[in-house]
Length: 263
Image 1 (cartoon, one colour):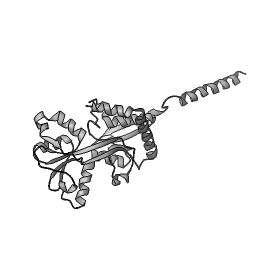
Image 2 (cartoon, rainbow, N blue to C red):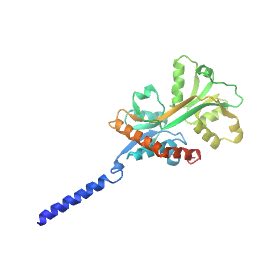
Image 3 (cartoon, rainbow, N blue to C red):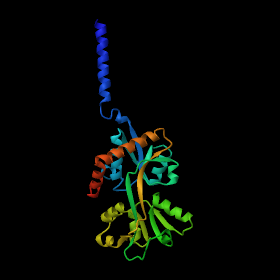
Image 4 (cartoon, rainbow, N blue to C red):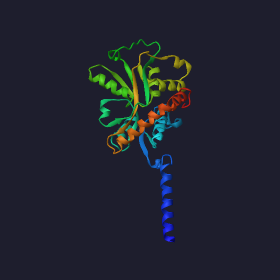
């Protein structure tokens, strides 16, 4: 009788443990980690910014809603891309679409719309309506960005495009004010932050951007095709992003960003 009672008690305890595991939120979530590379793109993405920037924060919360955590590694952009492409890291954030990248990655749903403009000195005579308008102009662009790829494609189409690359927007804007380049191609949010933090009122007043965007691009998480969990991670991120939008939390994060919460 005692042996039977102990057996029944053991089964009862086991059932309690199993039920507890089933109804514990995100059970085992500590082991579900998506490893993503990124680069400095403050205040949207940065190891030095609150929540690692707005875009990183959006990805964090989307992953969390699907029971995952994100581990970030910040590197120069080209290295970030190569390490994710090889599968050494699971993926990278955040990138615009190109057919070349799609060979090596699966794209998440859009995370954030990026608006990029052409910045120039106030009294520099410049109009921008078509690609040919960029011929004969000294352009400044960040190395490894989609903008550099677009300029390279223009060159392949026979346009005489002259550009130099740097690793930060700050370097580009200093070169612009110093007269070493004519145009800086930059994300509007990044440009506003750099100009506000590093240049005085007179210098800022000497820099304007053309009203027509250079591009408007949806940014995505890229998950490497070289890993086994590609579809799993994409599904988790997309489901989390959908829930983030439906709950209103996405709009809340963007509003906080516009109010300066990530500066």
